[in-house]
Image (cartoon, rainbow, N blue to C red):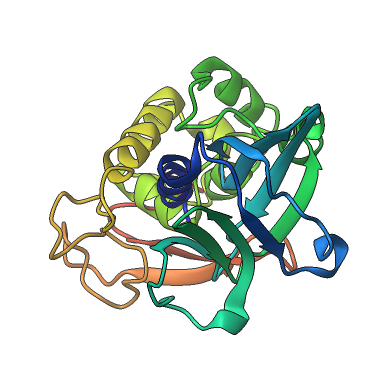
Length: 263
């Protein structure tokens, strides 16, 4: 699933392409909104909230928010008139046209058209956004601390604690912090530093398409998806295991030498 920095870039792409423009044609290719017509609406802008995208549109006395989520395979792309789409048309779920510009959402996992006033119903449960203007480290720490026995890996992935960290950043953040992903939150004495490192990672990577946590684009990651490969620090084989609550397990990567289990 895309990480917070990927969603931030998608929001920036849409915002730059459509903000201040009047929609000339819209096509929401989902049953619940198939008849919706937003043409004539002014695009106020698009923002990200964790892994969610909110495109705000007004027309006369109406104010809508198009709420989308990329999930595993989704992507937003922007095209000019006559430009060939780079993904099959049958994957298009949303088309927003404004003059010669088309923004197309492919394989989106969530598509909802709601009143802008109702945005809290879809994103109000999220914790502070690492890339948001309202980032609140103290509140994120408070939320993490409500369950001190929970493994740090699971806690960082829970968007209700803080928004924007996915499986890749969780694994990389645990590695650079020397924490095994199963370490209970209550035993992490450096939690503020962990959050600051996580914010730094996302802030740096929101400006580039290829993510890296090592600073080396040829060897971009420390442990994520490197199971059985040698640790870049100590040469121990990286391990992987499925962890998390039943039905919500995630592949978790770690170096057994750099991140020993603290029993």
